Image: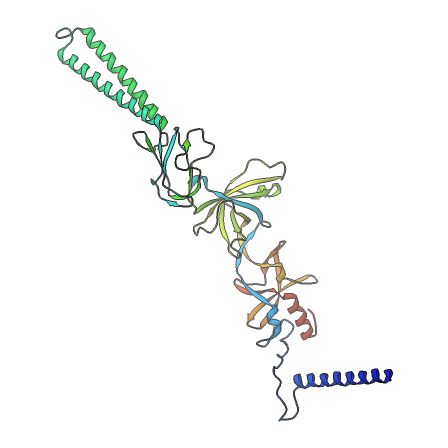
Length: 395
């Protein structure tokens, strides 16, 4: 009884499986009869090979979902692979402001990150030493004026007539002494305010000498400040200009000189390129890394880049341009290298190319590609295999 039961169950399962296969076939196989049911979805036709170098896909082909093509412009060719670099403020367009006098902060008029103009007041400081020096200067000037009048009266009376000659000489000596004292106090005032800040009595106004952005601020109201402060109170810089500090290997130093162009990329703005120009080459090799720091000036007119960002810098050759493609776009077949170009939507051409330089992530194509062509950057190997299968041969 049990054996018959299991044999019967197996037969039922086999019949059901056969029925399921027949139903599935009926759904995806076109019927020969006019009144047969139409399939719910029709499969896209297979790709067509036009010769051995071109492949065409119908609209909606599933293979298109696995392909990605990007426009590849012609760019200057680098001397070598991109190097590590970082951005810094341009010290030629940066002002670091501090107080040369001991005092107390009365008010702060600029916030961190604020755009300021040249001559704008950033803070007010009460400096008693400045008030004392100003009082000494006023006193010296008054004494000098009084002694000058005494000399003028003595000269008007005439030596030997109205007064004795020695009295005139004494008055003139006093005037010279007063003039010397005035000069000393004026010099002290100049030294106390060497930066030329605005002075109102004993109140000192810190003003920005340039237009820019406040990138650092270590000042707060009621803070005691002085000339021995470890950090500047304000750092104002022009964000449109930055320094690029590149770590150049010792073996490449001879190829770098002032005027060399630099192509800069950063993960913060993928796909964008920024330009810089080498200004100065370092004069010492780091004993640990065997690299030389090369300084370049970068134009940051758009304000996208920020100081202390890490970037990739490629030192460029003096002349020549080539199309840069990611290595994922390259197909190697024996001694030859190929890429696929999207000639039209769904239409891809395989081209043999000659590389000018090959890098770890991207390479430069010297021959075989034109400026701004759309190159397949994802799925090139799949296209190559499909073309080989459809064309029936390999180059």
